[in-house]
Image 1 (spheres, helix red, strand yellow):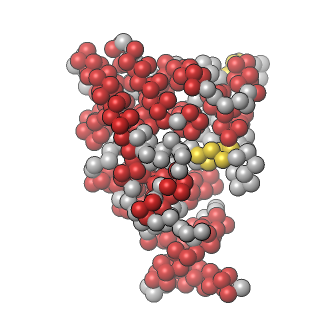
Image 2 (cartoon, one colour):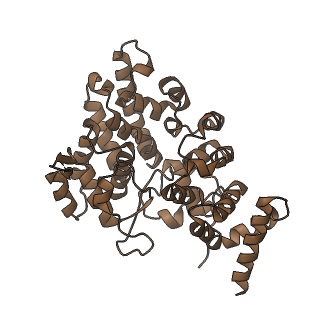
Length: 386
């Protein structure tokens, strides 16, 4: 079977997919990743997306749904078994997650019922779930669970349905509601920045003016307090989605997570990451937006930042597709001295054809990197001969 060319970067993975004509595909950088499909996914927001796999997929086991619900911060993943995704999405969309028990918080009856339902989520049900998450702050949820809920729901009903539902809800809100300090609902609204990139251009152009009208209505009614006093609101999230770098500078505390919708200022992103790279969670999307300098910044003192098994596995899953000497150097280091040596070694075996020339070049140098490259290259060559 012939391999897809770089010009066909999104066709093999996304043929027939709601993302197949996505606006974000215009930003594909051929060769930034090892594979064309990976180029496409990175341009579409990787890792801020969800891909559903069959329930019998041996490479992606079922998610421990009840355990995930009880954790504010759980093991991150991009690929989810379909039934696990349906159950979690319904559960996270309920108004109340937990009820008080004698010894511990118990899952609310509505959540327990949601977990028993395995039929696909309809468009109408999706609208109701979106309304709940945009108008309620629910105990037992975190920014991670809100983002996962959004991406899983998108994977089931498509980005257009979510953007339509969110836009209509925002249009119906009063200016007071747009400025309410709603931490989790406003974080849900912030995900619009990814969803709009995954719409066809004409659909995105339909919704953006409507969203801008909502923002202008909110701004026209706002009091003169500074943005620092008006954070965690739907209005602020719309500002960040629609106005990029200017909005991030004037309306946030500088945390890089607010910079993920800036597509036209790699220097700003690189500078911002450079100031805080030692204390923020690495994000492959920021590498795409800010360039390989960001990956180098993430790579400094990675052992201190990635102290757990889950964190190191997630780092490899995120950054592994990026075709760069910086990725190679990090994988060599993780293969020799990390909690995920086997996973890092598997990265070399899976991508042997692509990385062997890079290893040969690195092996010509001096120091620990060159020695690690020589050792890994010999191992790959032995496996090929064997």
